[in-house]
Each structure stands twice: as structure tokens, then as C-alpha cells.
Image (cartoon, rainbow, N blue to C red; front, side):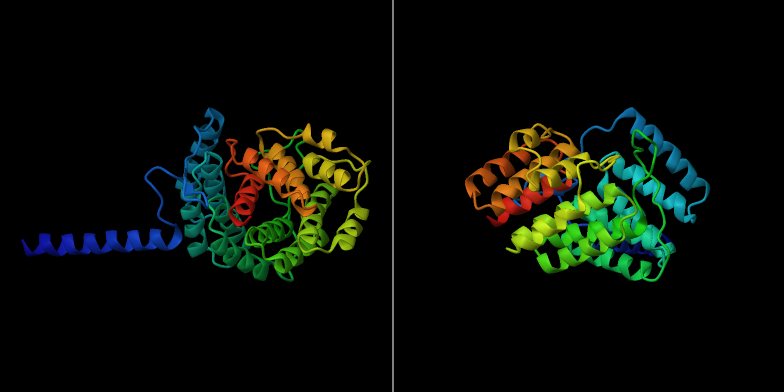
Length: 308
């Protein structure tokens, strides 16, 4: 009997520690939800595709074969996130941080997923840690989880670290730190796709800061003949800001998709910076009525609506 009681106490202690650890990593949400909006509404994952589930099964099998391998951990977590389970991905990346505390990739990816679930302060802490770890190191290509049509990866570890850190600061409306991070991201750019995405955010931040002349100057790096692989919406937004595309042409890009959300947010933020708050509000509300609640444009619109 004493042995049974002792085991029960140990099991309860382990369970309590697990609950506390989970609470430390993740905020409490309604059952089944991934996150809650800034207004307190629960957000649920859409049903994943069969392809996403098949790739997750393979990543899980690789992880089961060697759970200490850093790449196996990263892909298991990334594939988990691609099915909409961002909280599960955060837990796996957290295991990766315990096993590989000096691997910047773990912090960079976990920071990204903290943005997805609206945990901006935790995202900043992770991405700042990743920035410390990449300092003085050679940049490296990040393999694509969802390859583009040309099969050419456009992302890098340094670029993604600065990009997501800039976004996390942007979502806190910390303009100075957001701009500094995106400047680093622009300087780390390895291709024109990286240049147009970071330029869009630098322009937007400078407009929010009232530095309109500086905002116009950063657009000098963008030309219509750039060979863009993925970031077409960001490229077209920059051309729109330069006056080389009309508002009607830009609005044609607004769809219920991640790239469409980028276009929608860029146009709505442009109205905001030009002082047309009513038009901005209408477009922010239209964007947050779509299904893509984890897209960066949706999250940024949600933040702006909460602070308007």
C-alpha cells in the first residue's frame, strides 16, 4: 500500500510539473483552440490536407528513429505547424531547445510560431536569442517546407531571424526596433525576393513613424523588372507605393490567401498612413473576416484594429 501511495505521489508530481511546464510555454486557451484573438475570440485550426498529414507522418517516423537529431526535431515541429497545430509545434521546438540550446534555428522557428498564436513578447525573446546566436556566423539557406514553383529556396537563417523579429516588434508597434530588425534583414538579403519583402515593411514602418521622405527613399531599391520567385505581392505593393501601380490594380491581388492577406494589409495600412482611417478600418475588418487567421497580414490588421 505504501509503495502504491509513493508511486501515486511521484506520478502526480510528474503530471503537475508537466502541466506547469506546458503553462510556461503556452498560454491557456479554450479547449481545442490554438490561440485567441486580441479581442478574446478562440481560433481553431482548419482541417489539414491529406498531403500535410502524410508529410507529418514521415517527419514523425524520422523523429522516432532519432529523437536527438536537430534536423529531425525541426522537421517534426515544422510539419506539425503545417497541419495547423502551432501549439504542438512550439512544444516540439521547446524540446529541441532543451537538447540543442546553441542552435539558433530552434529559437527562430519557435519565435515564428509564437507570432502565429499572438504571443508577441515570447516571440521577441526567442528571436532576439536567435539573433545573438547567429551573430558572426555564416548565413545558411533554409530549406522550404512548401517549395515554390521553381523549387528554389529563397529563405536564409539570418534573413528569417531578422524578418520575424522585425514583425514581432511591428506587432507591438515598437517602430524603432522593428525598423532596425528589418534593416538588418534587408542587409542580409540574398535575393530580390528578400529585398522586396523587407522593403515593404521598412516603408510601412517609416510611414507609421511619420518619416515619409525616408519611406520614399527606401523604395529606390525596387524596380519593376525584378525577377521575383515568391514575393510577388510585396513586389507589387512596393511598386504601388512608388505610384507605378494603381490602387485598382493592387486591389486585384486581395484574396483569401496568405499572399492576398499581404496585399490587403499593405493597402489598408497605406490608407491608414495617409490619414483615411475609415477606409483603413473597413479594410482591416474585411481582412480579419477571412479564414487565414495565422497569416501575418491578418495578425497585423487585428493589432491595428485593437489599437485604433
